Image (cartoon, rainbow, N blue to C red; front, side, top):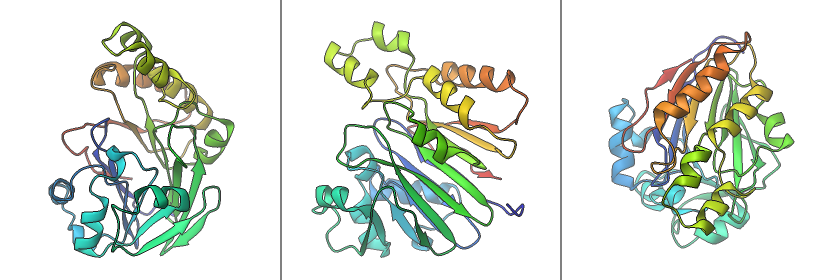
Length: 261
């Protein structure tokens, strides 16, 4: 890294819609577009970004909370969409009339000043991926909607300057909560979502001295509490002497702070 600035903001994070904004020296991109196009434009404006200036949209998987506004946004502002072939097949009706570039999960590619690495994760979708997005300013790692943090995930997230990681639920709140048993089992499965403690275990493998920003993402409104999620991660960070990243907890209803790191 050369000490340049990377700007990162969770525009929305949760079961009702997800979108992440990243800006490097030459690129402004979104990872997922799970809100309406109008709401995405509004939230971008709140952080001083014009949607017409977006260079690309990258899609992690086909679930509605990640693709709801993709087609309308991309058509209106002529934003190219990057998506894996299996996921493109699933959402082709939503993104018709859009310039699409297909990638293959497990194979990195370049876009403008970025090296984008879509890596496989375990989730109940056809071809779900996490991403690392690397430029001369450093590497941003994104891993949400995954039931287990595999060795591959940990390897890919190593050496990041900023991390966006899932912290979906508290195990006790999930098991004592109102969800039916089959849904609880799905969330706890290898194809579901990471708990707060799972996230801390993943962080233990991937934190590094250069980590400056840490976003907790995809918190459940029913099975988690932002204060609890923050406390679990903050406690972990306090117990190690490797780094002191800025800790940000994502929100479903408003953009996070825009980190300049």
